[in-house]
Each structure stands twice: as structure tokens, then as C-alpha cells.
Image: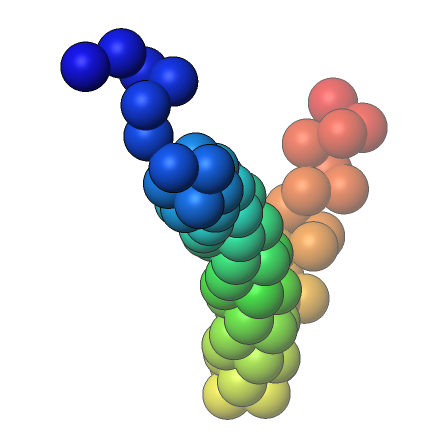
Length: 75
């Protein structure tokens, strides 16, 4: 039995399976990248909120740290 003995629809089915697999891999990669960007963005928002809360709880410590940094830069 030669390869040419298959009906034409079999070739179309095989081609469709290959195209579907390619599109699934491509879409998965794009989704993973978008999800990673969203995770990084939410992480930054969380860190900013935590720093803001920390500065509200201990405003004197933040000012002391800023003054120490200024002194370190001058030296």
C-alpha cells in the first residue's frame, strides 16, 4: 500500500491536526506571557501598598533613613 492510496480527506485531517497543535502551543505561550506580566504588575502594586503602610506606621523611621542616606552620599 503506497502513501498515495489514502483518500484525500485523510490528508486534510492530518493537516488540520498539525495546525491545531501549532495554534494550541502558540496560544499557550501568549497566555503564559500575559499572565507573567499581570503577576509582575500586581506584585509591584502590593509592594507599593506595603511600603505606604509601613511609612504610615513609622513616619519617623523613614525620615531618619532618608537623612542617613543623604549623609552617606555627602561623605
